[in-house]
Length: 244
Ligand SMILES: Cc1cc2nc3c(=O)[nH]c(=O)nc-3n(C[C@H](O)[C@H](O)[C@H](O)COP(=O)(O)O)c2cc1C
Image 1 (cartoon, rainbow, N blue to C red):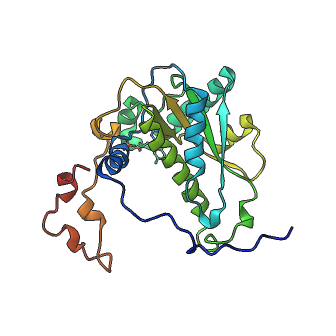
Image 2: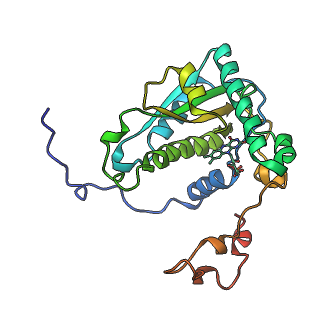
């Protein structure tokens, strides 16, 4: 099929005016108040809201614009139970792999599969090897792209007053089989989505003393890995000061 002629991308552009303070504040608020949620209160997500969230996910950037994602909405209780069993089995295996941290891990709540109003599986489509643009040396950019879609969904869910949790504790084959995924397709997330009583004030793993946020200053470098960035030289705790 003949492609239509290319469009000059500089001929008609959207003005690069900054958002006003309220709009910009809303974007940052969604970023900072988004939490990975594992406690849900059941209820429902209205179909038009779910469509908006998936629309937001589908507008994520992707390497070579390959759009590697697919979403499977779980509507059958028996299928949800089966996926929950797969997560529980992997939770046990993860605990064993953690050695002396096993008990602390088992005390963590790491999923809300049975309580969330909606359960969505995010899948990397089959046939991804055809997409070479941006992936010849970094094939994992398909995963990075799908993660962008999930982050869009996460932020939009916060804006809608819903919670979302990304569960990756599963053996991919144990999720792929019940969902009937074709060979080459790969599940990367079980997303628990729905009403919550409130958002954790901090990442739950920080509240549970499992991990804490790194200082931003330790993550930013100028020119070389061994050179901390001058941006944060004055205040090594600039991350905290910025309220991040
Ligand atoms: C790729 C990815 C996979 C994750 N998998 C799980 C998971 O299986 N179970 C879980 O409880 N949290 C999971 N999380 C959530 C993280 O624990 C959470 O993002 C982190 O603790 C920071 O908390 P916050 O998202 O509330 O800022 C995952 C997050 C990401 C980005």
